[in-house]
Image (cartoon, rainbow, N blue to C red; front, side, top):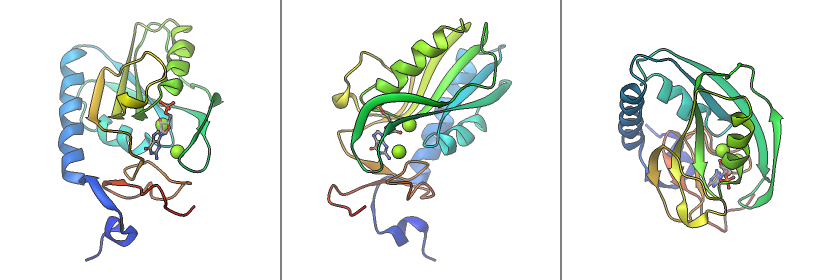
Length: 182
Ligand code: 5GP
Ligand code: MG
Ligand code: MG
């Protein structure tokens, strides 16, 4: 039977099996780090929605979700540089353990912006979980506490991540060729 990835005809960088195994490991690590406590997972829409839903199901300690939305990227593969908050937190994070759940830590602009925004609310702790990390692209000094996979400077789609809103539904993480038409 043909899968969405095969239909899209894109090369797989990380298969669904590799992703699920790594997400389960991160979940176990979070369970250990926050044993006996509660956490709030804050997903960054839309790219982290699928990662958050899988991660939350691999965490045994009590957790709740929230989402924020920011805009920094245009429709294609290039960033505009500026980060803008489109949807704020619903939850009160004061004195709470917060984990920001992001699809990709790239230049670091988005997560630096969110980190300083959230720190103003005085959370008990603030950590970052990024499914992918592209350290070679960093413009801001920031690291994630939990990283799924470290990758070189390649544009990827699938497992929540888009190219002009397409391909979020692919179950695998795939490579997007630089000359792919919009
Ligand atoms: P930043 O540059 O601010 O660290 O990353 C901002 C956001 O750009 C990431 O969270 C992600 O949503 C998006 N982004 C960065 N690299 C890629 C990529 O390779 N593929 C896709 N689909 N989005 C990316
Ligand atoms: Mg993102
Ligand atoms: Mg995007």
